Each structure stands twice: as C-alpha cells, then as structure tokens.
Length: 179
Image (tube, rainbow, N blue to C red; front, side, top):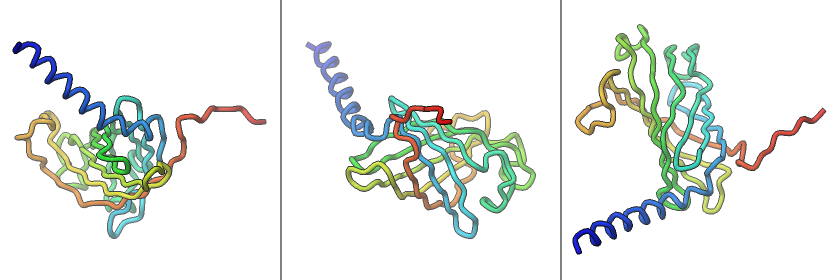
C-alpha cells in the first residue's frame, strides 16, 4: 500500500509539472528580440530562443564589450542558457545564466569574473505571442561557488531594466534561397 501511494504521489507531481509547462507550447521554438532599457543608458538587445522542454538560449548585442553607452562600463559576458516556465497563459518567467568576465572597471568584477543570473518576467497579451513587455533583474555570484545553493548569497544585485520584445521567428520559418 505504501509503494502504491508513493508512486501515485510522484505521478501527480509529474502531471502538475506538465500542466504548468504545457502552457509554454505557445512559445516553444520561437525566437524573440528583446530590448533592455536601464535608467540613464541607451537600450541594448538580446536574441532569445525558446527551445523545447523549457530550455532557453540568450545572446546579447553587447556581450563582447564596447558597451559603455548601454551599461556605463565596458564588460564582457558569455551567452546565457537557462529555462523558462509559463506562470499562466500570458506570463513567462525565465532564469538564465552564464559567465561575466573580469573587468578592472567594475569593482565587483576585478577578480576571476562571476557567474551571472538573469531573471526575466515577460508579459504577453492573452492569446498573442508576438509582443511583450517585462522586467529584467540580474545578480552575480563568485566563480567557483554554487549559484544554485540557497545559502550562497550573490555578491552583486543589479538594477531592474524594462523589457520589450518582439517575435522574429515563429518556429515554422523555413530558409529559402531567393535570388
């Protein structure tokens, strides 16, 4: 009887998880261009690809430095990979992560770089996956520590950026060579 209860319990969790992520099929295999705007700086852009099974890939227009206009300092960071979940039919939460490299211009980055987390909330109109608004928050953890450890405190919390996004590839696009 105990084994049956445990199996049923885990199956119910699986169905609950599938139900929450099932709402994400609307975004799966889509490519979005996001515009991030921080106070006092010029906007910059991200490509974000929503992969199957809740995975997301992000790369930025300013990742290789020369971004003082957009961030106030020149820093370099790697592409990010992470996961997304649909909180309801119009809200997507994204957490992605990657490295941000050593920079003598930023006090918190003067040694060994850091592990950077981006935390997005994107809000779409109901039944429309083409445009969104939202927020981006980010934080840094020391390289070599476990950023997934709940006892690991970030050593930097960044300001919030306002986000707009636009669908630029809907997963059904096929490449054709037009002469």
